[in-house]
Every structure is written in structure tokens, then in C-alpha cells.
Image (tube, rainbow, N blue to C red):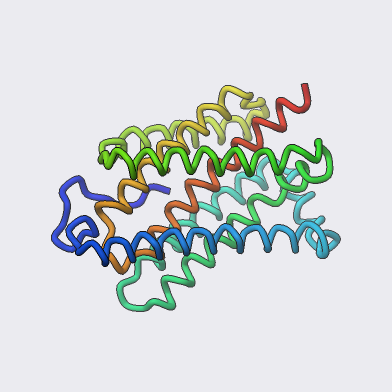
Amino acid sequence: MMNKMENVIPDYAVSLATGSERSEFIRRTYTHLAGAILAFIVIEYLLLVPFKEITLPLIQSMLGSRYGWLLVLGLFMLVGYIADRWARSTQSKNMQYAGLALYVVAEAVIFLPLLYVAAYFTSPNVLPTAAVLTLCLFAGLTGTVFITKKDFSFMRGILTIGSFVALGIIVCGVLFGFDLGTFFSVAMIALAGGYILYYTSAVMKYYRTDQYVAASLALFAAVALMFWYVLRLLMALNRR
């Protein structure tokens, strides 16, 4: 999930662009982020409502096999890497959009089991509550960066280490069958919040003004990570 961002501001960075160029870059970034979120919602609705009978075997296979889930996670990481590379292409705008679209579809697929359980086997309030809470957290963290104008690039090492530790715990949980628990979900929400601060800071300082597709992909990945664990936390609390 971690993309490259240097601590030294390069000559082509958005922070050194004119005010109008910077405003246009930020507008395009968050417009594309909103579009990615809307596309994710539409895809999930189609897969879980009108086409549920078609996708149900895939959902059951993802839920029913620990090792199959590890394979899905591995493929998702590979697809995420490819999508990020495409989104950062300097040769083709179409390639950038293909990367964003690929990542949104990959997120929709990996979310299928969690959203299926949340939609059909928990309280009907869980999903909308998770969505609103995620939106509020994202808005608060984004506002913090925009208001304070603080550079959060120093968090890169912390986030990288935290991501590897989290991945190791997830793999061990899948292999040995232990529940990661609510505290892990809370820790992952905090990690996702760190990514939102980091990438929002990058949007204001480090991306090129033509990298709004890549910037929106990075922010979408952070929002999706937060939504995943907010939803998991609410589902766990709902079972009690």
C-alpha cells in the first residue's frame, strides 16, 4: 500500500505550483476519489443484490478456506502493486485510469465476504453506521492536514513497519485459526488513519500536478482499509 514519497520536495511538486494549479490538482484528486468510492458502492451492490446467486459460490469459497483466503490476499497485493504502477504511468492517461479501475474492482472482490456477512447476517444498521463513521474519520483527518498544513511524511517508516507487523499477524491468524479480536481492529483503524494523514500530506506537497489519479488511488486504498476495520469492529461489537 505504501507508495513512494520523498521527504525532500522536488522541483515539480504540487506545493511549488501556482495557486490555481494546486487548487485544480486537489479538486481533481478528490473528485476522482469520490468517483472511485461511488464505483465501489455500485459494484458491491450489483454483486450482492441482483447478481448474488452468481457471486455466492465465490463468497462461500473465500469464507470456507483459510488457505484460499491467503491466496486471495496474495493476489490482491499483487494486483494492488500493478494498479499503483499503472496509475503512476507518465506515458498514458488511459493507463492511469486503468490502474484506478483495476484497484477498485480488486477492492470490491476482496470486500465481498465481509459485506455479504454484514448485509445478510448482522443488524441492518451496521453497514450504514460503518460508512458514516469512516466518512467522519476521513473528513476529520483530512481537515487536520488542510488546516494545520503539517507535513506527515515522517510517518512513512512507522506506517511501513506497522503494515508488515499487521500483515504478519493476519497471516498467522489465518494459518493458526485464532481470532484477531477487537483490539487488532482498533489498531488497524489507527494505522489507516495514519495512511490518510500521510497521503493527504502528499497531496498537498509531493505529488506532481498531473498525478491526481495516483493520488486518488492512494487515498482510496487508505479509506478502504479504514472502512474494512471499522466494519469489522462494529460487527464484533454487534455480536456481543
